[in-house]
Each structure stands twice: as C-alpha cells, then as structure tokens.
Image 1 (tube, rainbow, N blue to C red):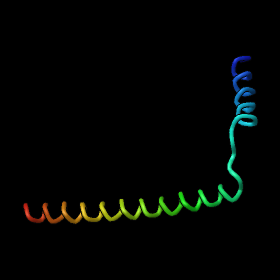
Image 2: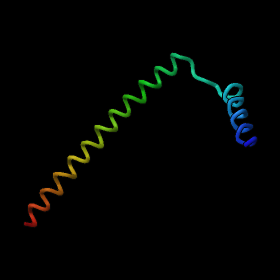
Image 3: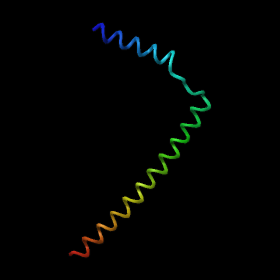
Image 4: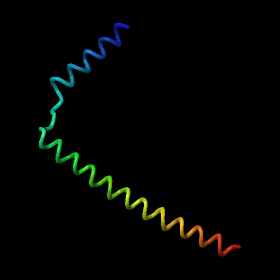
Length: 64
C-alpha cells in the first residue's frame, strides 16, 4: 500500500514541477483545432461509409 501512495505523491510532484502547461489562450486555440479536425475527419468517414454502403447495396442487387 505504501508503494501506491508513494507513486501517487511522485506523480503529483511530476505534474506540478516538470510538466509545462499551455497558457489559457493556447489551450483554447488547440481545443478549437481539435474540434475542427474531429468534425472534418468524421465527415470524411461518413462519406466513405456512404459510398461503401451504396457499392455493397448495388453489388447485392446485381447478384439477385
């Protein structure tokens, strides 16, 4: 149990002293960037999924 407590203390010490945190402005701009790329990526996946769905439907209708 002492090992877990020591690990948690060292983790907090590492976060407090050695991690360089972004400024509030940087965090906001990076959040917007991630949101925009997530939307673009989800639209691209939706488009590819729609195309594959139509191709598979037409393939199976061609078989019957």
